[in-house]
Image 1 (cartoon, one colour):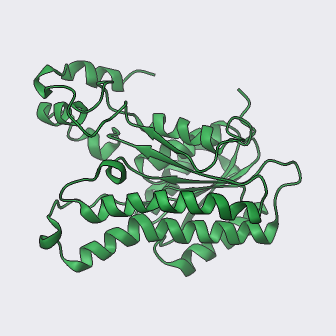
Image 2 (cartoon, rainbow, N blue to C red):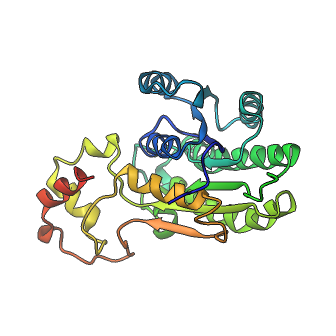
Length: 282
């Protein structure tokens, strides 16, 4: 299927992570030119991109996505390199490792989680809209696209990770507001949210040898399997496509195996080996 993304300029924040890296691969495969952003993982991202031999089609940039001035400068460098930004994927975020109740969580940790997962996305969206206003919409009618990466934690909540779930829930408000603002800049511009559930990134794969973790992860899903980063990336390509999703805006696409806010399976019923095998399939 022609997605219309060939030669479009795509800026992806958090491209050094598992989901962001899969998004980078997916957009390059569609023929896009990509500005791949990294923050804490910027060095590893540069090494990975160099090894792929993508040449001038992918430009790696480091920036603190929680700093609005750094994000503004990031977009300025993207425009200097490629002339414009057609698609922005505000994917950067960070899962707080230490699980704590709200009353036990230091204020500094709460502020950091909100900055990493909500304010960083807001600064990214702000700079994208400003850039789009400056360069103007495309003359071919292929509207600009802004995509946020959320989490099922923002839909169902996540006990002992209140700041993270609150930040991801806030992305829903951004989507529902910015879909009405972007059209003042680009009449065909669209804003959407992809919402992953449990996804087997490298960080999660390290725990897959724990049978109890796998059973816990899929107990609320009718599809007893974990997502792969590629599953999220394919959804991102669809939502950002000016052809496949030209009439889709303000939507939340949850990629979580039908996850519900209740237990559907006893974890003991889950075939853990089959879950692991499914992750290896193409």
